[in-house]
Length: 234
Image 1 (tube, rainbow, N blue to C red):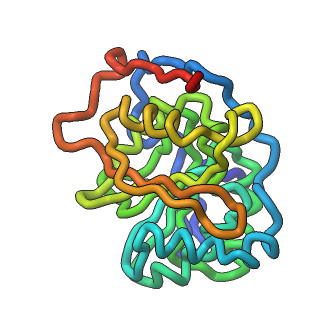
Image 2: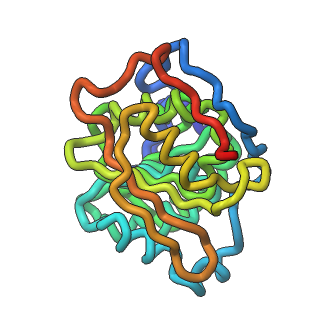
Image 3: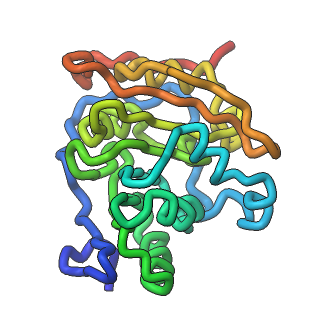
């Protein structure tokens, strides 16, 4: 059974079809390299657990019970599996990815753990395919540099965010081709789509930085053709 099949339901985890909000043409290509997707995991679980990466993210974004959190580029589900008990039975975790095989593996783990509050979503490089106005927090952890169409992704993500929502990006401060993103370039790309940076902190344990953004204010989402691509500093 493939991840995009609409009828698949197990223990409350529903797989949504690829699509969601229709992506609009006309987004500019990023004026920088895009890293290749090479693995469903960034680093081993024990290494990340040792520095309490997930709890650092939860605290940094103020994630709490009852919230809906989108784990964009969920991969193996490292954060999805840890966020499920944090948001509890009244909350929801949308585990989103563009690689169908990653979601298939995660689907089996979600079923094994009987996580009724996890929803799997197959998205596109320019559209996370999340339900409209459904998300309180969105996280993009060690994957933003792999997004082929960041402007389209952020543009379409805005429609899924609720009032007061936050978006958190965890990444390393290094060039995209080395699987990172310079913080100034990250901020520029978010601001090009109307987002505003509200926080920045270096996480403990060498797992990178957490940059926090709020979505575009009402009426501030630019037309796709008006978005100006950012360049690497220097």
